[in-house]
Length: 402
Image (cartoon, rainbow, N blue to C red; front, side, top):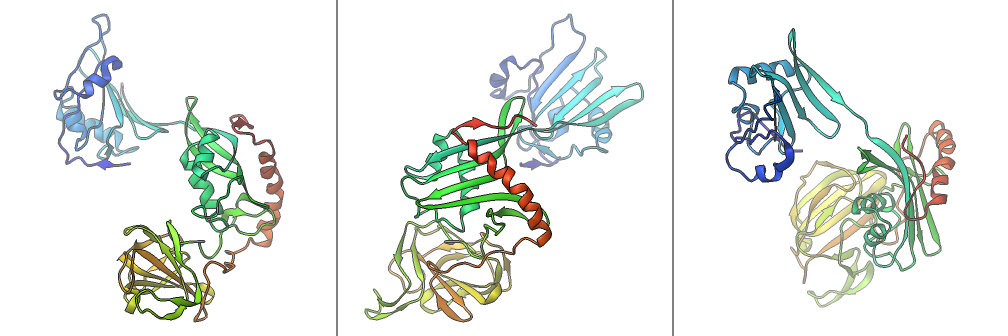
């Protein structure tokens, strides 16, 4: 949400009735239309324009003094100095020309209303709640997870959320196969009967070949997704630190170097990707190197708990510095072809206690497990949430609004 300050300067047009609102938006000159003569009240409606402020927006109907009184009366509940572009407002004027009511939509759930009474102007914050429904979706993979989710009647955001949950067990860039499938039970948020956005995924399942992965959300001392046995879905390291095109070189002790023209070890994985492709930290840690490093060119080295280090070579850009603490999935730089390389790619390497290990075969350590107390609470919640998946047939609502 972008906010503009009171220093802006742009006149917002005002409209009596919303029947020709789209046409009004294209007019350069503010317009005020009065209601029929049978009504003593005037209602002016508009939206906050870019680089505008309340004084400019209401300059055609309220004096600077009246605007100041409005701002001061609203200050205890909301500061009208901060307005968001595109958000609607309306002003009701009485037959004497004084403002009798003002409202401004802060967001989808909150509205500021200022009303004139016998004691003067009074401000209040009106709030409403989402109608939350638990629904399910299911689908089969033919080309991608995004396409499968779309075929189930859902949007890309649900696919992204599912991929985040299973990211430590499935590389959705390379490992999907025809016939893989998913099921998910998710909260969906509605206002006035219209879908607004997704809430929490309560449980999910992904079937890849003969392997079935299930995840259950749990909120206790730690919040996250866990296997039915209570083990964290989250691992210490991501499956891959970027969205790559292909693997151009694998971990091996004998590789013919295309530049040095000799056979030598390649203790990493080369992920081919266009220059500028974002690179993420594969785990939480501290940056130990961020600069040129021999034939690796621009290189970042991150030290992780439990004796692990990761290296990211041939970068075109680095966005972290030595000493920075980074989180798993945090953007740290972009793919390049600095150093000794014949094309753009990321040379990704992992070390355990100083020795190189194969990132593709490493069984990543799990994140911190549930405490005994949380584990008991998880087991009590697990069966109920997994049962939601049993009726997942795309698409079907399984729980009414709560």
